[in-house]
Amino acid sequence: MAEDYYKVLGVERGASQEEIKKAYRRLAHQHHPDKGGEDKKFHKISEAYNILSDKEKRQQYDQFGSAFDNMGGQGGFNGFSNFDFGSFWEQAQQQGGGREGSGFDNLGDIFDEFFGGRRTKGEDLRRGDDIQIDVEINLEDTLSSAKKEFKIYKNEICGRCAGTGAEPGTKLKQCQTCRGIGQVQEIKRTVFGTISHNTICPSCQGQGNIPEKICNVCRGDGRIKKEEIIEIIIPAGVDSGQVLKFKGKGEAGRRGGAFGDLYVRVFVREHKVFDRKGDDLFTEIPAQFSQIALGDDIEAPMLEKGKKIFLKVPAGVEPGKIFRISGKGIPRFSSYGRGDLYVKIRVDTPKRLTRKQKELLNKLKQEGL
Image 1 (cartoon, one colour):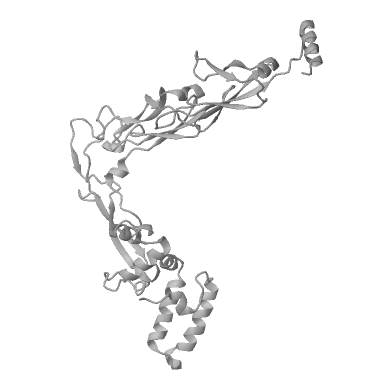
Image 2 (spheres, rainbow, N blue to C red):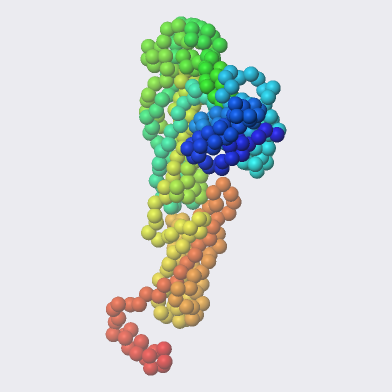
């Protein structure tokens, strides 16, 4: 197993550059071959300092550990003959809690990370941008799926060239930048040394060809800006702050690329009568003293317009008592059933009384009520 460069220099993993430099000078002086030290030991100390004193190399070494042993700062990349895959997986397991937690799904992911990021297809580069909008709805709108229409100014497929970017009647020609391959070579310096790899051609976006004569309307882009009416369905039960994704409703892609997506963030306006918590609704209803004392069927409000429901209030109920009415709340999003309606009893004290009411209350008072 490859050695730990931090242990070689005798410093902690969080050591500063100054601490690393002092440790190297001390050990180099102690183990220099001119002073009777071993060549192998001195070489290992120098190798450790070469990696840990370089900010970029140290960062990659900290991420991949001793898998980079004998590769950092050695010039060009000489293949994987010295690469310790066992050590790499051991480091990945220590950092990620097992191979599944290492952050790499396969060997291609590892090389993508080494060589500076995942490869991007030309289709991804030509893909249209996503659009994000906000929309306000009423609480009543959450009871059922609702169709909404929006006017959006966005990129759409050019009607003249049908998205190809070429003037009608003209042909496509080979891209001179990539010679029709769709990729160009990119040189990059990494911990391995100088690495060359292929990347998507910026001129043709990976297609390998470009218009012989660009479209007079879209100027070769394949898209034009225009106002469009977009129709979407907002599902029942949606909650405030929830983001809905509508695939393919975003910007048109460049030169025939895929459409982007539309993201709609929903805000539900506050209601005067109901408070919402999850799928449940909460409200209060006023009750008279006589209704509380004798019991009564009291009408409770419903979110659905035109519907009524009566709450059977027993005699002698305590003010502030909360009753639950099952299944009269908000429909559950992407599921079945509904939440519940919670009704709190509130006793309203009359501010003005008629003469008859006062007489009756005085009689009740005399009776001990």
